Length: 131
Image (tube, rainbow, N blue to C red; front, side, top):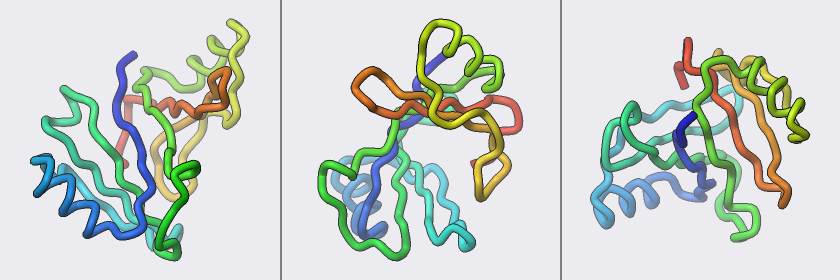
């Protein structure tokens, strides 16, 4: 396993992209709109996603700002098989809060587990990953 990205909800995507790229020197690696879900995902980082962890900036089109308490999203881990990983996590006493399956507005197979403090960790299946 490896850490893939950390997701942050942002109220103004362009303002955030300007900050992460112009102020912090990251590169915009990819960006995609999801009209059915009314959100945009933008991935920024210092290196290629295949080699380093990056940030996922999520802009929900109908939300202008967030409290810091709900601005944090999740940590993502790449796994070979999300279904098998969920079973292994449950067998070790872990809490799966979203079983493995395709994401709602895409094809990527994902799952979510929760740590003892309630922080979410997304499992993203490596094969067929598109989003």
